[in-house]
Image (cartoon, rainbow, N blue to C red; front, side, top):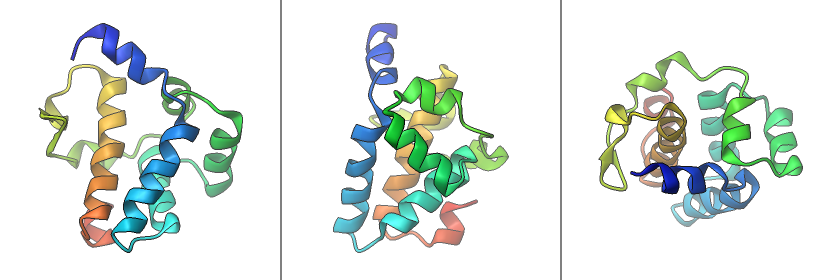
Length: 118
């Protein structure tokens, strides 16, 4: 992915993407609570911290920049998102964004929570 499209993605508001994650999960009989659990596991946000990020309308760069601690097991997330292997992504911020996408995909595909939260 080129730098220009990366910059565009980094500017997306987390508050605009979050409802899409919830809708995707709910279409597959998963819950908003599970979406929150997955995102909090990845980022280290508490439930209150996650809600604060949504309320503030931060972009993805700020959302990940302010994340308390990316889970050390995030590097165990493997697979393809948008035709690119997440474990081979060069840009660290884009990799974190794709990790989050991958976790939501796994949730929506019915994967067991204990397998998603490596």
